[in-house]
Length: 242
Image (cartoon, rainbow, N blue to C red; front, top):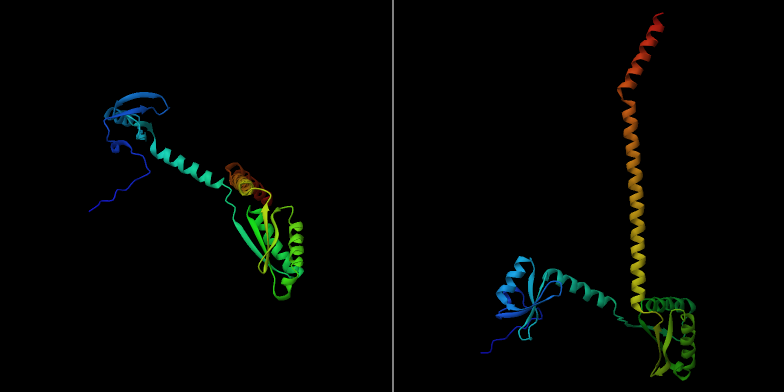
């Protein structure tokens, strides 16, 4: 019976390191040298760090003192940024009929522009039916018209060509998808900052109004004001008696 072995990409840390000695690297990259693994583990505990085996195939293995949780978090952030910065363009497809009216043409053209702005390539297909196949030039002219209308957003990557009953053309975006995403993130951040500024302004105005109301209430019910009102009332009563 064969027992399967699970191979992990994760490095061995702390008590998982079974060798007797390691070449230790300090938390700031300093070379400590070859020391007993038990001593390295004690140093890690004293520094509230982890002993991580970074080069298991070296003789002896190389280990480093780091905060492994923080290290994994930073690696995750780097991987996410790397994926975000990749130009993962997709190929979208839009299909036209040769006898398409102006309204439908504008609608489909809008889709093409949206795809190109998103950093994706667009495969445009003109579908020919019946006698239309004997005059493919009409499909070529339609594709050329589309390319001219969207030249601000994309360029022709592959010129119109006939494939069976269809005429195909591929458009490629002028800008990279990562640039578009960066611009969207920038605009989103600016929008959030504006919203937060408006909320702060409204809150400050509300607090000022409340403070003013409290001050007016204190003035209205202050002892000096009440006494003055009482004196004025007594004076008025005395005049009435006279």
